[in-house]
Image (cartoon, rainbow, N blue to C red; front, top):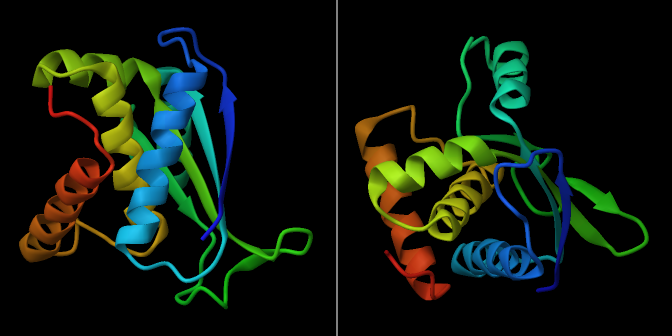
Length: 160
């Protein structure tokens, strides 16, 4: 499975280096491999400010506060029913929007690196793009968080 990840950055809280992009690409690919996603895929990852994600969270979810990550899936159930990029024959999974400021805050709060937090948010959001939802039941939340930790371990993302 080939993965294309398109990055955009409109914030200054975190320097988005080629190494950061490679780490997130690896984390997302590991999540898709873990879930046995059957097609080539495309994902967009945007790094934004708290103000930007606050507006998106308010406008799209009706929640009037900043959040750490938002997912905008384009997949309709199965891999052959999503948007297909004609040039690459890849499934366009959707958009991942990460508040870099929240990532910095949460990394400090949890006592791990910003890179770990960005990887966690990318994997979390990728699972949302694939249809997982941790807000429906405690069992779904437990399952999703277990998957996230297994994926991060497989991707070689250290806990600290």
